[in-house]
Amino acid sequence: MKTIHLVYPHGQRISTPDAIGRNLGQRLAEHYQVIYYDWDSFQTIKPDPHDILLGHPNPLPWTIFRRSCQQTWQRVIALCPYNHGDNGVLTAYLNPILPYCDLYLAITGIYWFSEVSHSLYAHWLPKMKHLDLAVDRTDFPVLKTTFAETGKRKFIYIGHKLPCKNTTYLTEIARLMPETQISWVGGKNYEKLSGVVSLGLQDFATESGKNLINSNDFLITVGSADANPTTILEAMAWGLIPVCTPQSGYVDYPGIINVPLNDAPKAVEILRNLQALPESRLKEMQQINWQILDTHFNWDRFAQQVIEAIESKENHPLLPISQKHRLYIRLLELTSPYSSVPSYLLFGVKILLRRIKNAL
Image (cartoon, rainbow, N blue to C red; front, side):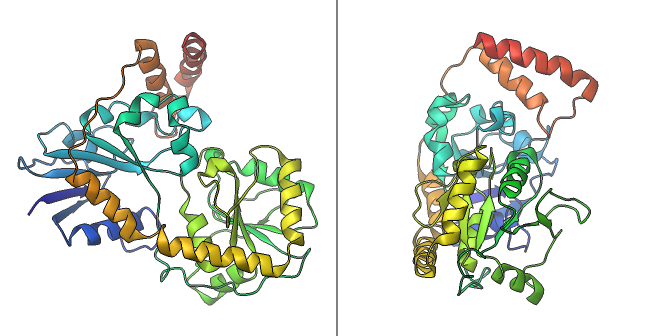
């Protein structure tokens, strides 16, 4: 029996990333011996020749996947979120790691994967396989069975304030439609978003948390560089109708409404149209969403794609890139939120970035 060394958060929380490592590991254990590791460990795994390394590289240097991928394995497979939005700054750390990997299973939406060939990371494409996220519907039971009357429907954003979530755009939308309530769950209890009802952290397993979900009609998220947010799938399971930018990864799904990035008047027009839809139409969208959760966005399908990658022999080299291109990605990595570069040096790094980008 093959041994899979799985480097991924795998605790008991039903939210990602723990849900990914736990659900994947349980299904892999039906076919392989699985050994779990924390992704922020600093150990080095010493494999037997037929062992397989699978998991999430940590952006921090000297962490377990980075240290271990250079050992002698039967296969090395990276598995982690991907997007190239906001200049690709959140993704740059993978560039020195992927040459040691046979495959990169990119957890991302179809929007991002369809655009890889036009991105800074087009040279990764030979190693990349698209992997949609999943949700266990028993963890997120139906809470929404009826919708508010037209004109009185509510929107809720669930998430944090990192730049990739683009919450300043959410406040702009809220300012243009004061007649509609938009709430925010997430962040510190003292954090606020202008024009948005800021509720802090909430526990959706409690009655008050469930009532909060039931009192809203739509989930809204307007990220600029969001790979594949699970909150969209969780909201679908609860019965809310998701509204998101294409840069949140999800496009061309009949039960998910897209709004444009950074065009608040157009976004408001779409949201007001949703306010006017008959309830029967919203219930149709609900049913469509529950069906696609059952048939596609589930952990059995997710695990099967990983198993196919484990059993395959695919190992294509990265495409060649210039030294300037490589240096540009390295500088991006230094400016990321994961970087330990002192702030007084970042100004010079950003100047170099601009100059090299103009020369690419």
